[in-house]
Image (tube, rainbow, N blue to C red; front, top):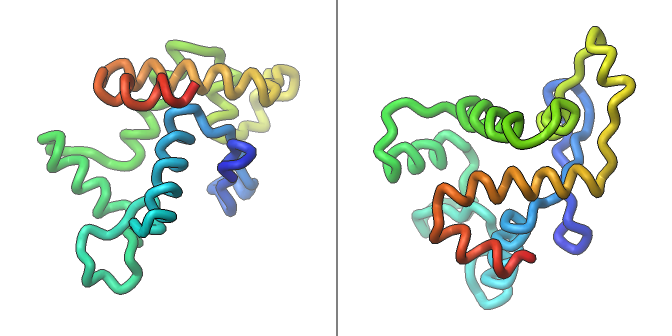
Length: 150
């Protein structure tokens, strides 16, 4: 939902719907994609590279992952590697409770999860910090996305 700045993931591994705020640069990317679609570009966030693709968009994240590997010269890369890297960066920058909520982790044996809560405003603030930390590794992306996203 670009209007409110939230994204929901349905039927997650732990059986719950996971709703997160869109960090500013991620939201900016989606807004740019939407504007491009209105100007006659692709209506998809991840459009197919070939005009011959019947669906017009990627159906499988493995193809996107292979493109990342090729463009980055990376031999081994799995989707879970990206999740693990995000979690590591987030853990270095924010609290355990925030990381747990971002990752949609549920552990009934972890009693701190019952007491430590993260409100939506703080979640967006911390997610924005993590996003900036990641983008700071690519100065061109940071310059293009962050000034416009604030």
